[in-house]
Length: 158
Image 1 (cartoon, rainbow, N blue to C red):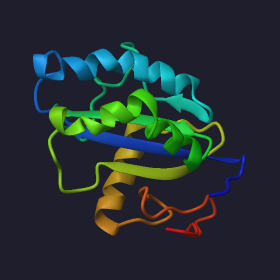
Image 2 (cartoon, rainbow, N blue to C red):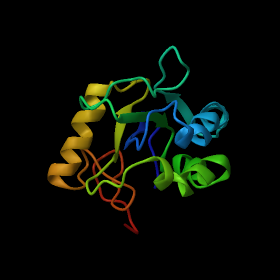
Image 3 (cartoon, rainbow, N blue to C red):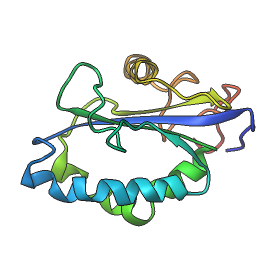
């Protein structure tokens, strides 16, 4: 996927916890947050991530559900995001996600293009995710299987 320096890729993913964050069940997950976030912060193509005073976003409310946690970030392009997602510590956590999070039958992640310098809000991310759930992948909100370029054109190979 080619990109335009005037646009960057925003991503949001949410997860419903199986237990409180301070429970023994989630200890491995919570202990990995700071190291994984540090890896993301230094990753090629990383531009920004949502964080509260805690340094992560686990205490940021999303969709009015206290059992949901949110991760949101902005990347240069899709290859830089997927390179981070599928390597190293993040990949290890991804493999274990079903230990910590409920399986949900609807979209829990969405991607969309933002103007250079734009930092999406939680409300914007919620809107994009709900749009994806209702309409499927479109240039407004899409997933990793069906992607669009910053001009709304479907990407080859999808």
